[in-house]
Length: 378
Image (cartoon, rainbow, N blue to C red; front, side):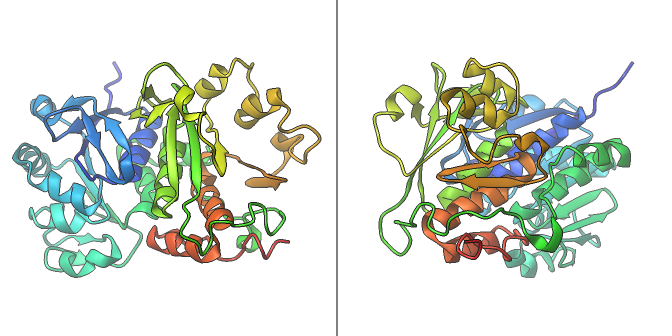
């Protein structure tokens, strides 16, 4: 009988949604039984940047379960709120004493694992801004990812995929981690660090760059969407101060994504369409595409082709091209998961300018968004 690996991902008000959702998604892809546990009194948790995640259970319902891994997402507010929960502290204390795998990202290695004494005499890393605090509780190492004993730590947002795959390797072995890496989950490393194909320098005329007007973006979500894509795009654009309206294309606000992560939209699509937007976006995931009543093909084509939005465009035959991303006219498409961060930053570049995109990339520890800009590729 196959015994499932059990994983606990606790979340709190202020938790970084990317750091929670990417880990949940990747571990479920690997075959782990992941429980998303709320440390609040309710299942709906308001994570950072206005993302609402619906947990699977309250932390109090998880105390009798033995987990193979506990992974703590970051975000300063979320970390502090997790740290005040004594049920989580007792669970993690017993978990560490029993020699099981545990990990944390961003501020959580310093302000939760470190302060609770679970990194003593271990090498660990964390968000660069928290390294001073971490050095009081661990052997602080300035690296994107650090493994020591059963502890896995990482710097945060831009390193979350590396961290998640490291957890897969710890639980399931190198072969499974390599298998998932082959699904294009990691950001692409193309020759000369060039990630984008040529597009006009003023695709959206950057009407919002240098002004006080916030660009308005509509993001449609529905059951079966890729939760990683949704959370990364929302996070990046809201960091850039874009007004992002998340609209459910179904008949209810709560949406069940492809890896069973439950997200809550801001409004129904029927209400959202009454407004005007600078940018309208669809996501991948066959559940989303089939909800648009189209037979299977590439995710982008499932939504765009039936409405002739790709007619006579360079996107014809994109399945056969090696491109991570393509832009033509005022249409942008990307291959998906591993390109989503770069795709989001490119949208920031086009809407708000290169300086804002670089600012967000640096904040999120995205190392590869530097060599090519929209204006450079004219």
